[in-house]
Length: 389
Image (cartoon, rainbow, N blue to C red; front, side, top):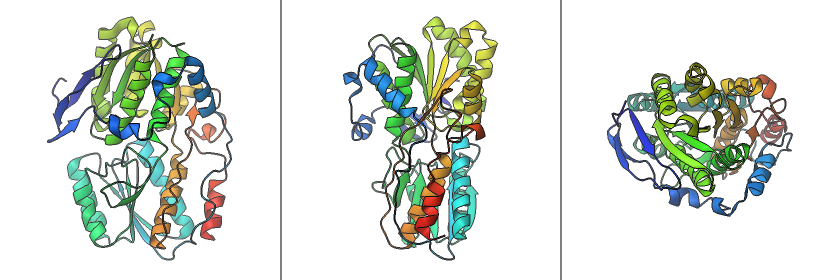
């Protein structure tokens, strides 16, 4: 369990900045040091926010029934196109939800869709990319894989003039620098992370003991983890107990033992667990149940993606208090719209949906009864109008 190729433990407490480079999966990954990346999107320094300010921001993120704030115009839908999807791992609920949204939207345009699953491994990414290229698509959508790590595999598509868009492929929404990915579709990941951490702070009245779960294979995951950590560090009575690095692709295997270890090590100090994805909690909760009262006192909050399992935990008010859910199906439609704009030789819309915190107070709205965050804002009708379909 202490093999750095399998699991890296990154410890930090009481505002201590962490920094260490680990060898993982054959290449070096900086566990921290992405501050320059996320600082570019930072609008309010966490240190400047009072508890009252945080409560206000958390309340705003929990509002439901917000009107459509995305693009109002664009090119009509292109005819007879085929799109390839390279999904990093369809076992991940977020990736699966986006892929389903892409297929739904592509069906409206009568586009062909070919899905290639990388199964969360480097070999799988190489195979999926080769098969996708061989399918000769008109456009490519990369879902969940890091654009920089995928750069050599994306280069042949770019060379052939295949437009590329992605979901959660970089630490920032928008065009990906030094990459052929013209648009990274996402909510602002750092805003997602900050709201998640603020929800933990406010629920604990400013005295949370926090463990953060992340995956250093992905730039976006580390940027979110660092943003959450900075909010916790800025809370004077809070304690950042650890940032724990567990590969998403190995959650089922690793999280039970990790959870037991954290319970034994931190004891009553551990009050809140924050994660960059709900999947961490799928395999932590059984161990928290086994732990009895010590496990039941820990509150779970996720900075994405809003899985069905997370919604069920929130509905039942068991362990998980909230998830800053991504509008996965909407993101699928947006990916198709952005790709259509590129195919019609127009710029991407650059739309970034607002952050939405799902809690037991608002889960009855915006798709919650269907165990997903699907905004009730008419986005399907809007995109159909734009595409003239």
